[in-house]
Image 1 (cartoon, rainbow, N blue to C red):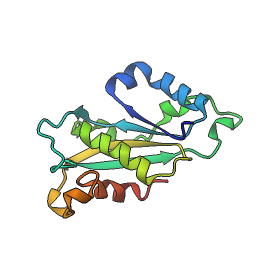
Image 2 (cartoon, rainbow, N blue to C red):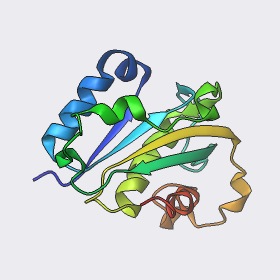
Image 3 (cartoon, one colour):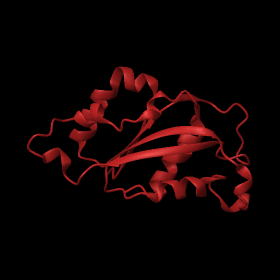
Length: 155
């Protein structure tokens, strides 16, 4: 059976399907990680495995309480309209799809599958790739350790 779902919000998802998606996630009773990309989601044109993570991703998060959908006044899917709000929502920086895909995989590796959460992801520029220093044959994604460190504070 499905133990956890990762949802990556695109511009289309947000505009057309966001609230419906939130209701479906709530009704499914399957824990999830909802990734909201704050910025222009684009392909990295010259991506290679050896280059790895390109953007210095900034991650804001909120975690849902256990059994939040059973609370007396809770309205199914209402969390979607009450997502994390801060100045990052005005961010126009580029967030690379490849980085978001790596973040989704790292979420599965690093975070508790029994917990639902929402992550708001933005980029504060280019990541300093000289800090990786690992062996390419030992890493699933070059720079994934940076994402793991950033996710360490997320419940």
